Each structure stands twice: as C-alpha cells, then as structure tokens.
Amino acid sequence: MLIRQAARRTSGNGVRRVAANALRRLSSSREPESGTTSSGNLTALSAALLAAGVGWDYSNDFRFTRAAYLYASDNIVMPLMRLLDAESAHNVSIKATAWGLSPCDLTPNDPILQTQVLGLTFPNAIGLAAGYDKNAEAVNGLLDMGFGFIEIGTVTPEPQPGNDKPRMFRLVEDKAVINRCGFNNHGAVAVAERLKARAEAQQGPAKGFLGVNVGKNKWVAEDKAADDYCAAIKALAPYGDFVVVNVSSPNTPGLRLLQRREAIASLIERAADARDQVQVQTKKATLPLLVKIAPDLTEQEKADIAAVALSSRVDGLIVSNTTIARPAGLRSNFKGETGGLSGAPLRDASTAIIADMYRLTGGKVPLIGVGGVGTGQDAYDKIRAGASLVQIYSMMVYNGAGCVQRVKKELAALLRKNGYASVAEAVGAAHREKK
Ligand SMILES: Cc1cc2nc3c(=O)[nH]c(=O)nc-3n(C[C@H](O)[C@H](O)[C@H](O)COP(=O)(O)O)c2cc1C
Image 1 (cartoon, protein in one colour):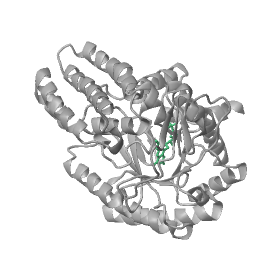
Image 2: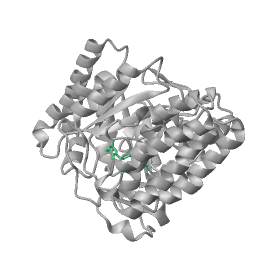
Image 3: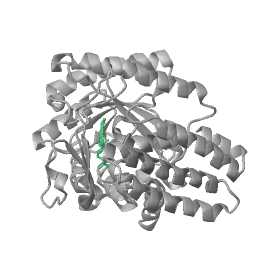
C-alpha cells in the first residue's frame, strides 16, 4: 500500500526507488524455507520485476505499460515463482501483495458483474477463496487486484503452526495443488489486531467485502468445537462483512465429522448466537453466516446439510473445499501426497455439488461456488449451476494474478452473449433449462 500511495505522488523513477527499498525489506524478512541463496535471488528477481512494473504502471504511456506489466506479472514473474517451492512462493506473493506490488485493477467494475446477495451489494461476483491470505496480511492489496470480496482464514482461536513442511504441492501437469497445511495461522487475537488496524486506517468505503473464515484448534475435541468457533467469531466478526464456519478441511482430524446433521445443526445455532451478539455490539445492518462444505459428501449428507440450511439461521453455503478424492488421470508425481486436492481436477466435481445443493435447497440458500475456477467460462458454469458468487484460488498459481481481471472480463462477455442483464439472472439457469 505504501508503494501505491507513493506511486500516486511520485514519478516512475521515484516509485522504483521506493520499490527497491521495499524489495530489500521483502527479501530480508525470510520465511524459514526460503532462506537459501537461490530462493533469495529468485525472490529478489520476481519482486524486482513486480516493482519495476509498479513504476511502469504509473508512467505516462499508461495503456502500453499496464499491458506490459500484466504480461510481465503473468508470463515472467509467475513462472519464476514456480521455481520456488510452493509454500515459499506463496509467502513471497503474500508479502509482495501486502506491499502493494501486485497488479492493480484500475478498470471500473463492469455493472453487469455487480450483484446483490446475502444482504450485501458486491461490486463484482468474483472473490478470493480462503487459505491464501490466512492471516489477513494483504487484504487491501488483494482488493486492489480486482476481487469483489476476500475471504481471510481459516483462523483458529489460538495460534497454531499447522502440519510439518512440506505441506503444499504443485501438481503442474494437472494444474492442481495438494495441501495439508492444517490451519497454520497466527490466531484470532493477532489477526483481529491486524484487521482493527486496517479498519482504523480505512479512508472511505473499501473496494470490496471481507469474509472471515473460522475454525477450531487441532487439539480441541469435537464436543468443545463450538466454543472455539464462537471465540473466533467474537474476535474477528466485528471487522468482517460475512462469517464462514469451515467444517470441511480434510487436514484437521475429525473436522469434517462436524458436517453430520446433528453436529452441524447445533454448531450453526451456537455460531449464529455469536454472530448475533457481534451484530448487536457493532450495529452492523447485516452480518451473514455461511458454512463451507466438502466436495466428498454422500447423497444423504448433502440432503441433511440442505435440510439444516433451510431450517436454521445459516445464510449461505460455500461449495466447496478441497477434495480427498484423487480423480483418475492425475499425472503429477505428487498425486499420492496426503491432503486436499484443488485446482482444475476439482472444477467439475465442485460444479456438480453446487448444482446438487441448489436443487436440494430449491435455490433458496445463496451459494458461493469455488473449485478450479480459472476462466470466465468456469465462473459462468458455476453460476448457472446455482452459485451467486464465485471464488478463485489454485488457478491463480498457474494463470497469474491477471487472471482475476480476465475472469471478470470473460464472465461479463458470456453473460451478455447469452442475454443476461446481471449475474443474478443467470444463477441456477441450468436447472430451469432442464425442465
Ligand atoms: C494451499 C491451500 C490452503 C487452503 N486453506 C484453506 C483454509 O485455511 N480454509 C478454507 O476454508 N479453505 C482453504 N483452502 C481451500 C480453498 O479455499 C478452496 O476451497 C479450494 O482450494 C478449491 O478452490 P480452488 O480449486 O480454486 O483452489 C485452501 C486451499 C489451498 C490450495
């Protein structure tokens, strides 16, 4: 952010100087795994390119330089980042984004992508999924990239280190990721302080909405889980626009058992009480509560969750988390790693479960669709299956940060081509055509 603010005030050369300072700080704040010489050089090189891009971004030959910047970001920086191990690259990208070095979407949102759902008017229907900015370190930079909403987390009440490294793997041949991070995060108190500082520094309305995704600490037993979710909601929800109860990570033992009918019904009641309490305290007009579900549910489990969603105080579902399935045809050597699979191989499975949940809830419960989205067509398919909003994560690893702008542009074109005046009109269209 500092860099972007400086950039607005100074010449291209000035920006590059500011960026160079930022870069020195960036590469000196080492992650344990990225401290090797080659990683350090790569980090420096990647960030230097990004920094140079910021200079171009604000120079006179605006259109050419923006295109060149996006090209460099997606075709030079991203491939270089892939030379780092997955988690180091992830950490560098978070730092770079927090420093305002990521591509900034200066195009106004296309009105066709603006959408009203969950009592909120989203500037566009494309968001960032949970797990990328777990600790809310780069929220404004991510919103600057063009997302209509960002979901931070999963955050647990106490900080926890997560599983042993390596725990994130790129399946390049499959355009996929496997992770078994295990909710590594700074804990609710630290993340809430960061969000509070952001709120205090905020001038004018934010560019998009913020979702806070909460979970339980690894060592907390199932019968005490609701206490953890409520503690995290009370700490974080005051700074969020919506709350997500994550019961679907495959990397916390026993967590997905919370998706069973009685367990999810009672967890939602407790979480809704905590949400209501925060809403009263903060005088927020609305504070929607969503539950994030797995793609690996049986037909009975899906029907149970749909029934609970219809009869409880939950406002929406996020469909879906990563899968423990390993579809036939995966080619990467990492396909046997334990953890949740995301990216291209999850795309159709998650679209199918969005369609199932839309049908089972009669379209009455708003859905956020997530899984393998990398193009406007992918987002459009999820919307037609029943998603009111769509999130991206893994495909950014392969398509670059510029993919946010591309997805939005392609989605807007597809909506127009097919005669829709808004995202909302297309939600669930596939079901209506079947009849
Ligand atoms: C490295 C990684 C970490 C993730 N961590 C979380 C998390 O902490 N909480 C959560 O709800 N989802 C998490 N997810 C799941 C994503 O939010 C998303 O549901 C899933 O990856 C499918 O979307 P995608 O194919 O676009 O990545 C994570 C995904 C990845 C790849």
